[in-house]
Amino acid sequence: MADITVRDHPEESRYEISVDGEIGGVLSYRREPGAPVDLEHTVVLPTHRGQGLAGKLVEGAFDDLRAKGEQAVVSCGYILGWLPDHPEVEDLVAGRKPPVE
Image 1 (cartoon, helix red, strand yellow):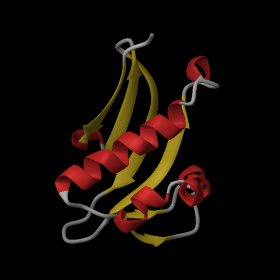
Image 2 (image 1 turned 135 degrees about the horizontal axis):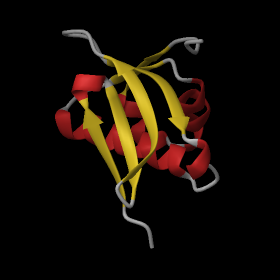
Image 3 (image 1 turned 90 degrees about the horizontal axis):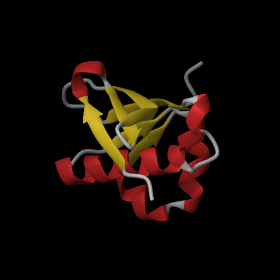
C-alpha cells in the first residue's frame, strides 16, 4: 500500500499530496488576513490520475483547516462538485464562488 500524505506548504500557498514521497497533486489557495482561505484549484499530475488522489487531497486540506480553526471559501470547480457528497465539511465552508479560470 502506498504511503499517502497531505501537507500544507504556506510559502507556496498550496497543499500537496505525496505518494511514496513523490508529489502527486496540489491544491492552490489564497490567504488574506482575517478572511477564510480561498481554495482555488486542484490538480493531480497525469502520472497519478485515477487513484482517487484529488478527493484525498481535498479531505486532507479540510482536515488541516479544521485543526487550525479556519474556514474556506471555495472557488475550485472540483471541490464545488465534491462538496455535495461530503456534508461533514459543510461547517467549514464560509462561501462558494464561481470557479477561477
